[in-house]
Length: 102
Image (cartoon, rainbow, N blue to C red; front, top):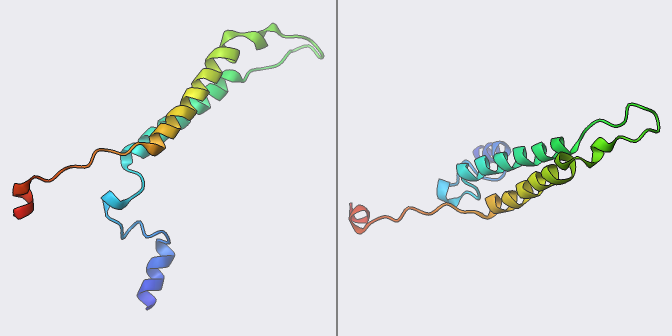
């Protein structure tokens, strides 16, 4: 009984006891999610920028292509690819008949 409690405290979701094929995401999914997160952050960085140096002044730099086209497109692409990376499942390896009989 005590052993079962220790396992539950260390691993409440039971991922240590799961086989690799039973886990919700593979290593490739996590790499894809990390890349998408970097793409989203890059898009937000491109959209950001300094304001006007003069108080109540107008800075035409806010209408640059980088801020109103490139940054939002990168962020949107990152969000779309993030959804794809969550849904994507790697192909399962199929055992041949000779491997199953051994």
